Length: 66
Image (cartoon, rainbow, N blue to C red; front, side, top):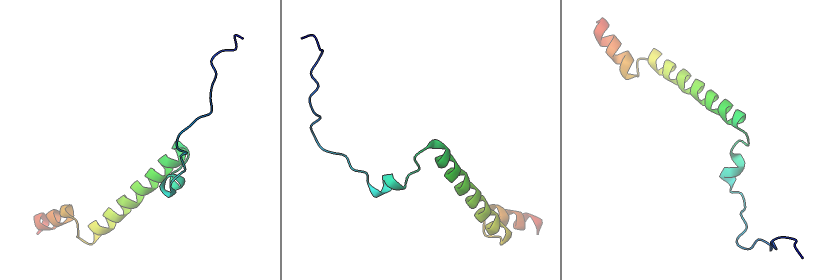
């Protein structure tokens, strides 16, 4: 008789993964690696733009040097 509380079956809606959730990395290390890669790509993109004189900082530098 003293078996504790009766646990019924869970009721309510079932939760299915969305495509966005399936794409997300499962662990923190994979997420951190993705963030690092994105940072690196952004830096490379900025440096490429700066070489061509298309950033605000490079424009200021060109005006000062002339």
